[in-house]
Length: 436
Image (cartoon, rainbow, N blue to C red; front, side, top):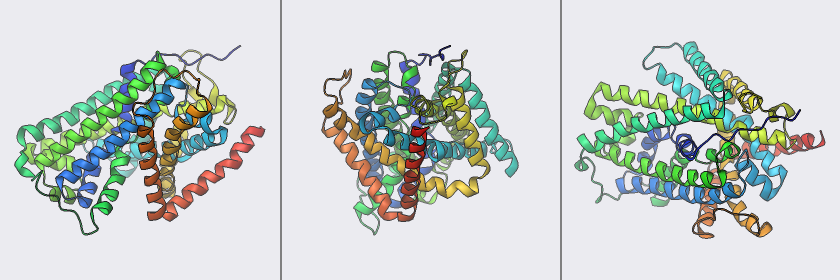
């Protein structure tokens, strides 16, 4: 008996909200303080967020061509495998499963359980239990069908946008442009403009990452050659607009100096005009945002492991699809089990996760460069969408992503060295799977 196939159930609306919801997690609520510490001039603050948005849009335009050309399960995994061969594709999936995505799931689970504790007091054990319970809940939802996972993504992404909308309305309605001197202050810290922008850009780029998750579910999208590229472009554009408007609202409520001194910028900004109620609204919004992103990551990333198993470089069972729900059930379960294991041993794995996260940007650069490779090696392939602004758009993205990787290598040699060693360890593992 042949294995059942994945079911094409996700619409353009679903994919767009996956791209948006994967990007908007906790970054927009937490990183503005770090950015204000590096750049105390409001126009530079807005400028670095705009730079991040330009980079995200360049990436989305580039990945849109690849997604329309190769609308397969796993998305970026398929791009890398097609352009560079199985080893590079496997190393991406290897890093994503073992640490990058499962570690992110653990971090998100701790985040939403911590903010849940804002409303229901929890002990340390209780916080851990809520985190694990949340992972189990989103796992069940995503096993029950890709449409069920898509609906969860839609609802929670719309709710987090509504929460951010309250902050924006408060900023423009009760705040004032006079709070911050937006146009005349262009001062920077003692290290100089280039150094300040580089430090701030690190936080900005983490906040913008995630829109590529829309490519992972391409095999379950309706009319993927049309919907996947559109969803990527819509997602990156909306996230950029949301981030810029939100930061402008912050600057209507707080000065850059107040932002830099605040560990909870969003809560302090809203509390400045709404009192304690504002803090409660932000706590609820962050809970919704991080819990929603946990659900999206549980939906999307298992499609990478499913594709790897289908290619014969992962456990065969992971390539099986549930006969009733048409979901990669074992890929989803395996990811969630490993995420919970990382969560239980978080103290052991926390540094390891920080070592490996930067490898995401290595694969970002390689995946974008795949546009150049595939145009040369497969010039006659069907390309329903071609990257707007080619070759400058993908070249700019590859350049900025590569600079970010080099910055990490120079500034954090230990972390990047361990990350590269971790990737190197995947090479003999890949060869073992190929022999098997």
